[in-house]
Length: 112
Length: 169
Image (tube, rainbow over all chains, first blue to last red; front, side):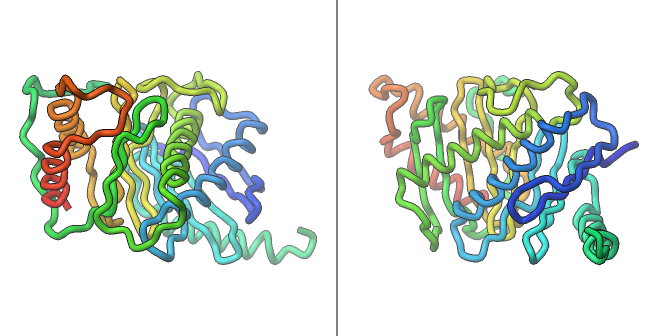
């Protein structure tokens, strides 16, 4: 039933700031998740370079054989991406909702 | 993963999903990263010179494949990031979409990579890419004068490809 496998949040320089695993087989350890996050950050940037038209803002959806990866980039450059089952609907609105939660609980926290 | 379902040599092309010309460009690479074919139909923006563009594209695909193999949530035993994957080993992506384009990718067991960059609203092009691979086999591989690993210069292939791509988009 679990449609979402994991969630990552990376800051504007590519560093992983949040990682939650909700049920992948073979969990990734911290180092691997850091590497995956920075690799994704670079791929996102390179995909903008290869665009045939102006105004590309990076990869929004990656479809693989066994999973889909949805990515949302906020205005300051924080990226939220979620690994889910292929064809899971409403991921874009979920990511925007998570962004709202992030701004409410994390950014408005004076001790962060 | 079953690569070729039918037993026909040249299956009939998939039904076109939309009309109009919204394919931007296409690349074909071999397993060593040599760009065998680059075709451009509609590309208003060129950020890099052709050599750098091909290398960047190949590098992007190589890294994305490595990333998807590592991130695969259904496979417990994953290799390390950066270790080159054999074609067909590990989970591979078949397309990604940005706000301005959609890139569809297919890798054959022989390491030939076919990439088609189209309009973002394009549907699933996997069947179309398989058909394009069929065209490649018919016009390029079966040509006795063609030496593998060199850029494709076949006029027949180019025409058939052009015709087909304009019909799918």
